[in-house]
Structures are given as C-alpha cells and as structure tokens.
Image (tube, rainbow, N blue to C red; front, side):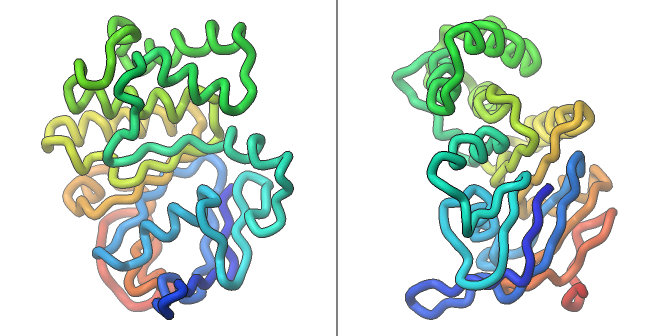
Length: 230
C-alpha cells in the first residue's frame, strides 16, 4: 500500500511543489498519475522512491515510513519497488542479463536466485533471445521492455513507471501499457505517471490528476481537470 498523509514539499528556493496531499493507493491497484508540467508528478515519484523527503506529512510505502526508515531497512524497502523511467537508464556496456543481475545483487540476491529469476522475467517480457544483447543493439521498444524487466526482477509488490511511453511511438505505447496492465493483473500494484491523455482514456483505470501540487480529481475513468478533490 502507498499512503501519503498531509504531504507538503517546499524546495530550498521556496517553490511549493506539493501542497498538502493525502492519497492512498491500495495493494493491487492500477493508477494513472496525471497533470500538466510542473503539477508535482515528478516530485511524487521522488517521494515514493525515497529520493527526497517531505517537508511535512507522512509517506508510507509497503509498510515502510520514508521519514523514519532505518538504514538496514532501505534495501528491504527498495526490494518492494520497481521503477521504470522514460530514458530507460540501462547500463549500455552491460548485456540485458547483466543489467538485471546488477540490480538483483544490489539488494542481496544469491547467485541461485539470480540464475532462476532472470530467465523467467525475460520470458514474461518476450526478451528470451535478447539476454546477451547490449542496450544499443535493441530497438526503443525492446529497451523499454528491458527496463521493465529490470524493475520486475526483484519481484516487487509495486511498480512505478515514470513517463514510460515518452520515447515510444503510439503503437509501441499502447503495447507497453497493455503489458503493464498484464503485470497488474498478476497482482502487482502499478502506478503510471504520464501526460498522455489519449492513452489514459483508452484504459479506463483510476486517474489521479495533479495541478499546482494539489490533487484536483481522483476517479476511475478519464483524464479530466476539475476542482480540488477532497
């Protein structure tokens, strides 16, 4: 479960990026987080991944409090999260297999776990024959699927995709979103941050709209504007 309670974030220059958001995402939900540039979407991602701390309020991720987490708990918390970025962030000099192995070793996975888990994830993403390829040898869609494989390889309970279709054409964008829906149907909580209105409206999932650091709309259905929600 993801829970934000009365969360505010003010940057050092005085910019109020988040202005008192309360939001809950239940286990197993699929949620689109949408809004215009500067609305607070990227800040929410940084809060959820522990990259930054709120100025005020509480952020809970899968049973861990971001404000009070102990150093020894950080690898456990990170193991519950898989993050997919627009720019892939794959290590270009490493093969797809080695990219996945790297993130598994980072959270303390054993060689046996690595050997057993990676082939299963590559098969799920239809990348069986790309294991020994390096990212520059892959198409954009294949690189994004490799990035999703990396996010899934530690068997997280939650996947956060930050503008995952930003570098893909419309057909590949729909294909990728269907893949994320499939992952969600297998029990994984999925949060997709995007500004792609048509893509959001196509899938009929819960849509949380941000504007100027506030939640302005929260409902199942379409990407719409509206007054402050709650």
